[in-house]
Length: 385
Image 1 (cartoon, rainbow, N blue to C red):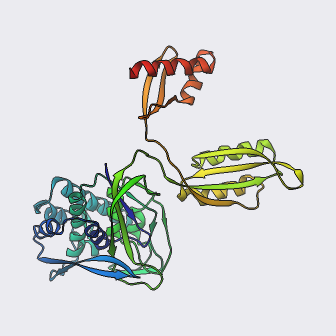
Image 2: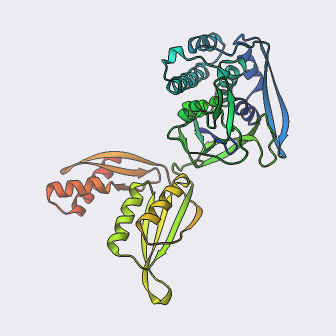
Image 3: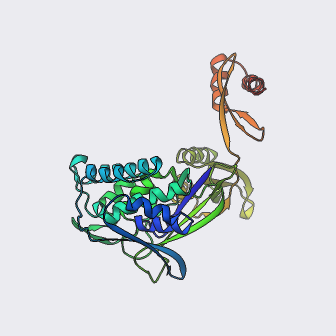
């Protein structure tokens, strides 16, 4: 499977996306031809530039059409009339539908009454359509994104001066991991946010992949403190499906009770920790204590650190990044005399019945847990043979 990973460490916009995809190998002639077929009277160019010493591609749309206000049906008509592939057309329409819903929610009006301001202009229509055409030309099957740097400060819009992220951008990125770093300016535009909200499968650390190309798309400004570029990595999925980068949070505790530590473990797992362990340890002055170790997705680090501070007596934590390798897993269901049991298995041949399924059936049927597990294992072997 071919994967595209958006590294939005300096935000994302529509033109940055197109530039990065071209830089990563998208066919320029295919892209230009598709955009010309939209009949918006625009011309297009891509040129090499640098941002803070990083070589990047800058995509520019030039047009004499100064129409800035379009309704969703008008934009959909333009896209449907263009010579785009089925996939590119469907993705472009999905992006605008997501954007329309966000604008409608932000202004509390029906979506059909939404006036697309900046994103109704020719350049924004071409940015979105161009990004979808470029992704399709590269054969991208799945899209992922890093946490998104949205910037800070204010931005001038048709609705006046608004805080960053703008209301529509914030609406599009609900439930997505965002942060603010760098210059006080808008780093993520509604167009860029809409592309990710509509097309990305997940947000966070990069999935395991074998990188085949990378591209950098330049933003308009050249900041003194950081490279104003969007990086895109393209590659083939490796045989691992979970995060390959995790945060490890640790603390040594010698003044807490087993009840408190047990409850803290439950709270950490409920808050999204991938794993929590307690290891007996002898501390300074020969005090018996425990090492509590939490493994988590990087975006949950602060949330889980807060749980540790609130639920234990620790005054400090150690946090570091580690690599994680996990084989891709599938789930099969087998039938036992006690009831159905899900079994997790890998293509390498390893498998294990789901503990919670077996525990529940053991309690319901008043039989030993190991009996249910053994029968589930036998049923799985028979099913696979």
